[in-house]
Length: 480
Ligand code: PNW
Image (cartoon, rainbow, N blue to C red; front, side, top):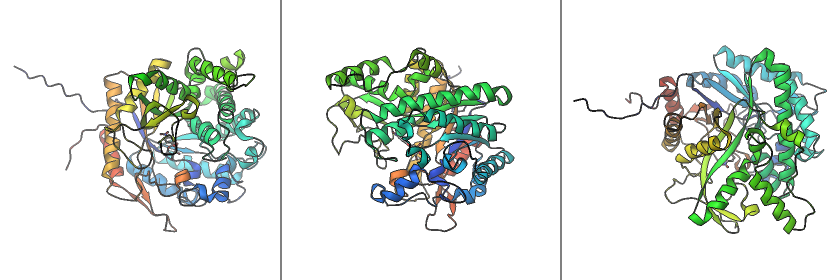
């Protein structure tokens, strides 16, 4: 008698890729070298130190502008298949507009790309990870419709310079933060609180900017370079607190999907539930038209289908209940609470982490199932997932556990749910400038000593763990 023991192998499919990510403002430093002009984050951190927990800025950060070779060597030691980084728009185009390309800026990214490729690591580029040129902010930034054209010109410059070697492009990192955290809440650069107005103008312009970049890639670059273009959305998985909260929870999911629906849905445009909800509310509030700007049919068609993959950043989950958000409710970084009239909380069974980062690994799998239900059989690339600690500890067992538990959910989604997930990305390769948390929140699998002028990098236990997963292409390996 053969005892059939059903233990699924915890192996990743062949071709599945592992990487790690960073972003320009968070790691580069060198904020004013050569002809680089300031970005909104240079301005925000310099002018509002009281809005940053430790009053710090990314002026030096990890100094990756000078130390990129060390970063490449680390990525190689870890066995990363790809390294995801972003281009600083105002380093490449000091005017924001594409009339002048910085020699220094273009050389920096050229060197980094070539250095990665020489070491067998694929470069994955984010065009926009929040550091808008200040000069463009002065003209209205994401609330000026012209920005779609400015962004197209910037994207073309990058595709022209690097498209021969870079095969995976992201237009945007987390539009929900660019528009919602920046314009609805005003908590991050450019710090303009315009709830229910600015955030919606921003997302409309951003969707058009994305579509323009995608379409020029399609037309001018895909035939010779054959790469992939998409963007990455951050999703917080929402669950109803009680059965009564189910309707609001689905509305909250839809509201967060205004950053996805125009691109990924079959019908295009805003999610119908959101369109209806905001139109009705706007009317009650006395507005002559909906606060959510409409798309023309032509714009809907122009944006719809402009993707080659779905980029997903997942960190945490929330319970949804009705109510008015107060200062103490953990609403950040979740969107839509004042708009819908809901509050977010954690579940007692979920693992509390540092600040907002509650660990609920099944949320990742549930979120991916929701996306597939909405948008069909899309290719999903997980482009960020990670865990922070307040202290720069080296033996970071809680981070190791976070990675293992989330990678397990990735495997379940592939094996049990049949979801086409092709990549996983650890945020972050390095401790870095964590926006308004400054240097107080550590996300690196490699630690950085910010008191050392050489910004010494030291791999943590989680780096060794991740390297072992990559090497074995599996969550199971001989422990010693
Ligand atoms: C991301 N949430 O931000 C960003 O892409 C990174 O630049 C950042 O350093 C990293 O995650 C860690 O914070 C997030 O709503 C924004 O759960 C929102 C959420 C998570 C991360």
